Every structure is written in C-alpha cells, then in structure tokens.
Length: 338
Image (cartoon, rainbow, N blue to C red):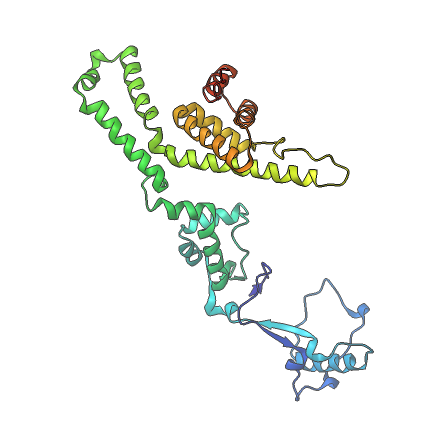
C-alpha cells in the first residue's frame, strides 16, 4: 500500500512516533552496518532489511555522538492516525455516495483534475482510497459550495430552481395557462386555420403584459424602495464623513457645509436607475424621502440631493437624458413667487 499526504489538514488523533519510541532493547547495533555512498547502486532494487531495529540502534548511537544533534525524542520516524487504518479507508463508490453523486461522476471529476476532490490517502490494489474523515470534510465543503447551497435551497424542485424562482415560475405557469386555455377568445386561436403571425403576436403581447404588470410580485416594490433609500443615505454619510476628515487636515480651509462632495456608488446608482425605469411612481416617493432625510440629518438642500442623484443615474444608468430630466423635474421644489 502506498500512502500520499494530500493536504495540510490536521489528522484527528494523530500520534507522532519518535526514534526513542522505536528503539528496541533487544536490538544490536553490531549487527548493522554503515554504507558508503559508493557502495549504493541507485538502479538496483531496494534491499529488504530484516533487522531494521538493529540499524536504528546503530543510527541512534552515531546520533548521540554528534554535537548539537536533536535528542531521539524529537527525531520523528513515523506518524500514526486511526483515520488511515484500513477500516477507515473508503473507495470511489462509498466516497461518491457520501457526496450525493454517482461513482461515474466522481471518476469524471478525478479524471478532469477537479481541485475540489481531495487527493486519495492511499492506493490499494491500484484503487484510490480516502480516509473517512477526509471524505466527511469534502462532503461538508460540497454542502457549503454554490452547488450545495443551490441544492439545499431548491428543496427538490423539478427544475432545481430556488424556492423564490419556483414560485415565480408557478405563478406565471398558472397565469399563462389561464390566458391560453381559460379564455375562450384565446383558446379558439389554437385552431389550425386561426394560427398566423398576427394571432401569435397578439398572444405573445398578452403574455408579456402579464409579466410586465407582475414586476412587484417578482421584486416587491416597497422592499426595494426602502433598500435603495437606505443605500443612498449610507453613501451620503460616507461622503460627508470623508469630506469632514479632509477639512480637518492642517492648512485646509474649512467650508461652511460638509456635503459639497456627495456621491452615490455605481451599484446603488444602477439600482436607482432600474427602479425609476420600472416603478417611476414608487421611485418618486422614495427619492422624496431621501431628499427629506438628507435635509433633516445634514441640512442638505433638496436641489443638491436631486442633482447628485440625477448625475449618478446619468453616469451609471440607462435612462435617456430626456427621461431623466423630465422625471427629476417633477421632484424639483417649485420656485417661490415673490
């Protein structure tokens, strides 16, 4: 049996065997010999040493005579661990079963050099063998991987979709079923003579309309709006804190306000842009809340908040300039008449 160490994972209940542990009182150093390098034939088969204990005794005697040599208790000659015993080693079939995959899949992983599969601890009869503890660690790592998380959260779904995605699929499947079959005016178009490009386009438009009007079911508007609101205010707070730190440095003129360098991070700006394009009325409400909160916390004028948001959307969003100007114009406070 050949054994290879595959990782730096500490072995459980490992025992270090030192030269002192292996010395046998019955060993006789006189029955051993020290060979010269010239006497060793590297091409010859390794000799079978029957009296290994005698050679260890001779080596220990020479070791004791060396200046600065390590004590025998610190000279490691072997390592022993229960997990590498024959009873604890498992092959490909058992390893695959633990991982929830077929043996052929595991062999394919091994042949492709998949780095997630640990190296075997032993080779017995030409077959890879793993310590059960190593296999358990591999199974746990698989469970915590992206594939493992997906499998857990799919809850046995037929398409291996997450619970949320499965809910969306089931909702639209029922909705499309009702549109395509539950409505007599649509069902009659399944008749062969009624099938034409215009008819198919009308049905496709009806299905697409169902999806477009169900966005709030896919991504709840009130939750998204509050999240974006908090993210924008968080970015504002970071910008203000940084600006105050800069102003506190020596020989820097102090401004009256600390909000002259507001910003919105790119992911937040892109999400705000999506929100405006898909739910303009809700976006209008939450941007109004951002404007009010920014003024309450930092006395930032509404015009400055709206300018920052408009610039962020222009740089990292998909709104046309015309749409952005029209939308933010509806948020700009009306001018006061004298």
